[in-house]
Amino acid sequence: MGREIEGTFIFDGGAAARGFALNAMCYSFNDAANRAAFLADEQGYCDRFGLTGEQREAVASRDVLAMLRAGGNIYYLAKLAGILGLSVQDLGAQQTGVTVEAFKQRLLDAGKSARHG
Amino acid sequence: MAEVLGGIFASHVPAIGGAIARGLQEDPYWAPFFQGFDAVRAWLGEARPDVAVVFYNDHGLNFFLDKMPTFAIGAAAEYTNADEGWGLPVIKPFAGDPALSWHLIEALVDAEFDITTCQSMLVDHALTIPIQLCWPDAVDWPVRIVPIAINTVQHPLPSPARCLALGRAVGRALARWDSDDRIVVFGTGGLSHQLEGPRAGFINSDYDRLCMDALAQDPDLLTRYTSLDIVELAGSQGVEILNWIAARGALGDATREICRNYHIPISNTAAASMVLEAKVAQPA
Image 1 (spheres, each protein chain N blue to C red):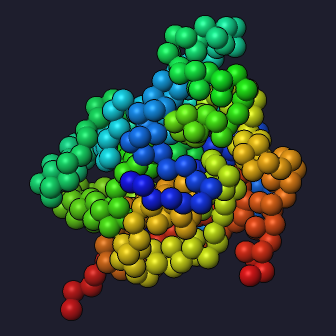
Image 2: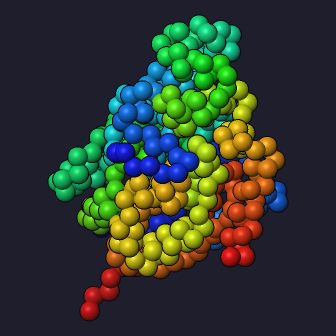
Image 3: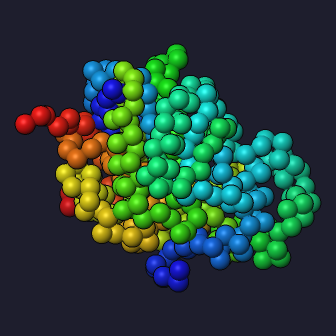
């Protein structure tokens, strides 16, 4: 506990406790009916799971870093991203502050440098 | 006695499942990854396994954070896949092998591993994708499975040393399994990748290569790292290498590397496949 790794959220006990409601809501999205219910009434669905104010705001603004700060776990948040039609490249671009094209290019460049390095 | 033939190590990025569903195996973006499985399938054609013991991690299909086992082993007669929320097609069910599962459970508890046992267990893309990659045309899956899930989601995670020891205990138990079964062991996930945070997109090919070399030649080398060291070196989700380390442990002391493929990127991930054949010790 307590180890800092640059640019990284360690999903430990503190985060798991803080993020429980948000992650529980995302876990519910395994069920298509729940995904439809979220899309039909996002506020009401967040109420059902008792999201904190910080979590609601993060979800409403589609702000992934804010969701992570509020205890979201990326494996669960990915299910919310799926509803919103966002890929992991979209999430990566948003979190690193670059365009999706630039984020994808960075990954391709990592491949090129690995082959030549 | 049963025979452990070798280990298959493969990434399990969900997008691979999407590419399979859309028939993109020959697409220029995907081909360098899919081509790695030609050699895997050639080896499997010779090996002809009946059973697959699969070390993988659940991504919030079967387990939620209300109950998060560090190590969980399936003991079901059948395992089903299900909707994971992002539109991957649901894969047909897998037959289990409850007798072998309970043999492993007895052996693991006897070896003082305090595992969770699951008579009902949904299996997610981390299990289904590597199996699909190995048997893309199977009408019925040619292997019965025993899934073993390792927590790579919520820290504290088990250490690489503990995962290697778990795998070794599974390997010893498989060697004592009184049957004619031909067994392969899977380790799925990785290699380096990070989905979240300002470091999203992080990849470390040097560390990935070190891991593949060590798995082939000297897996104990990987026990010098903690799981948080792996997060730092391979990214938050790069810790899925724990599944590979456990699978390697089940193969015994010596292995022969049959094939290896490593490609960046598949989605946000350094994607890889590898086969290590178990070398049975010859009597002196």
